[in-house]
Length: 252
Image 1 (cartoon, rainbow, N blue to C red):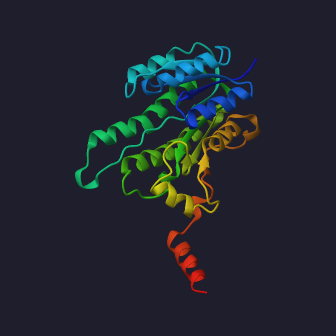
Image 2: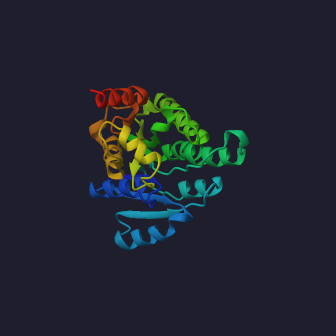
Image 3: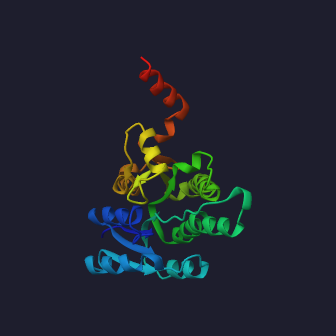
């Protein structure tokens, strides 16, 4: 019998869809949660894949009851859970809007944590939970305070879940994505980040999905409570040192 994995954000173009496609290509059945803004893509995916491969369930955005209803609709044992959904909104520190913080934290922290805890009740031994997060969790943010904080909170929660569930042979890990092309535009900060990243380019959503698939698989059976950064080396760069080095080369 093939594995069954729940993917939150399975119809979202980018991490979610690429993860869903990668898992299906490995013979894994995906139960995918999606949101109203992804309805058009969800309909296309329903036509592309049979229900033996992909079962899509719609969830209302920012609605705890809808989340719980989707989780409880699963009437079989599962082998894993992937959260590939996220929300980013800019914060104005001088005119802070708490409603934005609530929205971002619900989508990026409360919802995936709630899903993981409830879905764990349906998991077999040696199942795997993977949460897609961001390198923003490791740095301060000028315009995405709530986003960065929600990702950092999720990193800590992953460690706590791993500690509590380890004896039940359920692993919990995160994949922290760097600057990924296709998810957003390559203008402005994306162009700057591309120049800073040691590999000299933006990442691709499928490169994140590849690591997620590895963590879901038995090949990562002793990987637990970890955050794997898929960022092309972005976090290792000292921006000022890089600038000074490049300027010194110009003057030689």
